[in-house]
Image (spheres, rainbow, N blue to C red):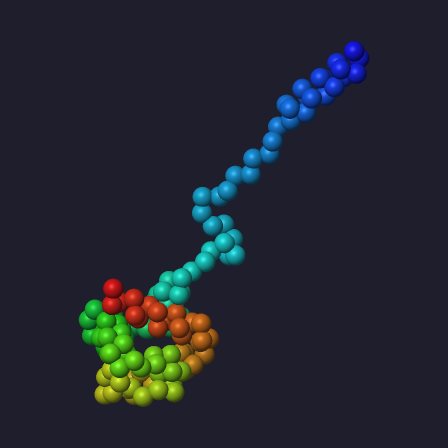
Length: 128
């Protein structure tokens, strides 16, 4: 009888044990949790360290051609935008502005392939 009473008390105590509930944060809290799409990274570079926004706008020509114009021409000609940004391709959108763009190759040549591909993805996103 004592054993049964002891077993019952033990089981009652064990069932009352409070379970830990791990709450997930509502938004990313660390750099590892933040994942950017290539388009988001491209937009960040375009508006930030690339400073492309100084000469290019989404839908209208400013100093350089619009992103929509660039994307359309590169898509139609199946051209390599990343190669151009590395300074390895010919100007196909607005050759008359090539000398102005060439000065920016210092910035784009220093970018990684991932960053250049993200810029390309952002430019192509203008076609949506």
